[in-house]
Length: 162
Image 1 (cartoon, rainbow, N blue to C red):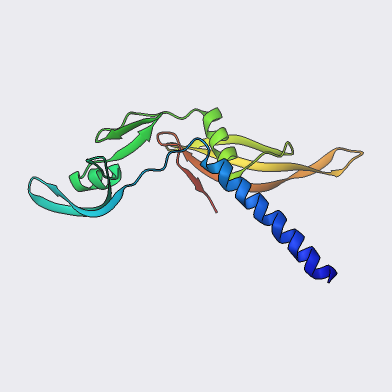
Image 2: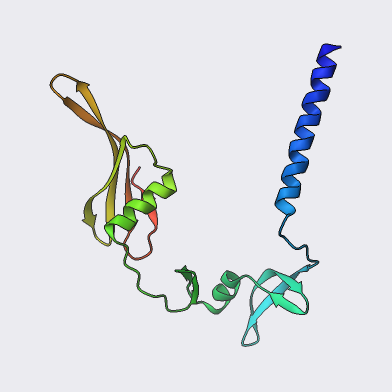
C-alpha cells in the first residue's frame, strides 16, 4: 500500500512539473497555422534542387541555404547578417579564438588554461591544459593537456587536432 501511495504522489509531482513547464514555455508565444510543402527550386528555368518550404499568410519561406546552393553561391551568417555570395572578410583575434574554444567545449574551470600557442597558416593553435603540481614543497609539476585546437582566423571554425 505504501508503495502505491508513493507512486501516486511521485506521479502527481511529475505531472504537475510537466504541466507547469508546458504552461511556462507557451507563455509569450503565438501559435500559427502553416503549410509545409516540398517545392522545386528553379534557376533560369532549370531545376536545381528541392526544399521543404513553409507557406504562411500567402508568403513562401524557403531555407536560404537551399537557395544559395541552387544558385551556386556561398552563404554565411556574419554578425547577425545573412550574406549570399561574396562573404565579408572576418579576422578572429587571439582572444576571440580563446573564447570560441571555451564556449564550444564548455571550459569553465579556473584550473584549466586556454591560450594561443602559435599561428599556423591561417589558424591559431589553441592549447587547453591544466598545471598539475607534483611536489608541493618544491612547486615542481607538469602540464596535463586536455586538447589542441585549430581556430580558423577567417571563419572562426574550430577543428580538434586529435
